[in-house]
Length: 395
Figure 1 (cartoon, rainbow, N blue to C red):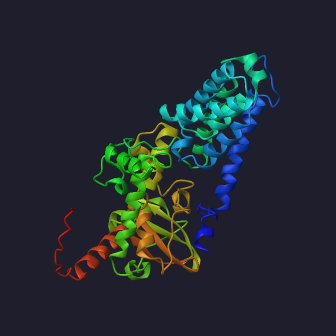
Figure 2: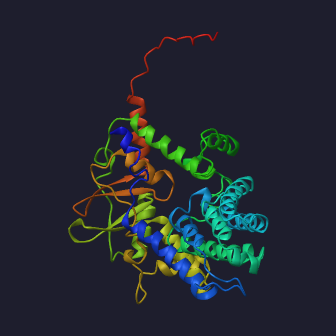
């Protein structure tokens, strides 16, 4: 049975939403290319027509945008180099089967040497080799239009679509600035490993075509955090959360909210409705962001914008419902420490509300989390002495 399982699905299951996102992206990309630039019928005069390999490129660009094989260099240079190689083979080799096989084989070798491996490039080479009439008409222009032009259009659409749908394409580089614009690595990527060491790991395990250096760093960091939770007691949110909460209502004025922040030195305040139903959360940054927006829109100074937000006597003073975040992460009383750690490790949130039947019963702050980990470390039994076993000598 274990041997047969090798023929089963190797890709982890994904959500229907992600499947729809990828499919919609391919539809949008090819539709825009077909409607605005490239024709669905072959036009040897301009060379502006769709070819089948664009469908394969769409799979990578829109379904697996984090793959090294889907990056702009791989897609554009890979497809273009494959087309140039195949056109050259067509001009030299007349026998169809040999022409097709040689075009694909040489295209694979050439794209690898150019660090531009892109699986659809093999289909590009095969398409060119099977289209001697197009090669006769277009020559090496076949590589420029439709191949290079069509691929560039798809890449540009994929970049825009990725931003609109929350995906990072092209993928992150190891030395990219962090989310704060500084040169420090993100907290989960501070591994003590250089880019060269991570690259060597990918090469050693022959994963360079499957994973980028930046994504490898993120995965290692996430794995370290997950492993750290195994070395702690099996705690849940209910064990470490703050229970006696200071909360505000949706109609609480911002001046009162600011006063609570000053009084308690909190970083966040939960917003509740009748019966303790959870509505959202307000972080201090929400006040600052709203004041910054007012500054940009009304050309006020930041101080005057903040003073206006705090005004209790205006016709329509702003309230908690105007600035709260209602779509942030939440936890249940049984949510494990292993699940809570990643939510706050990347610095996006400082606290996670704990809900039961949509009512807030507590909140886990970063301080709660650090305290719990510290107690767990202090209470952990000391490691027992272990005898050193010498490694066997070779030869």
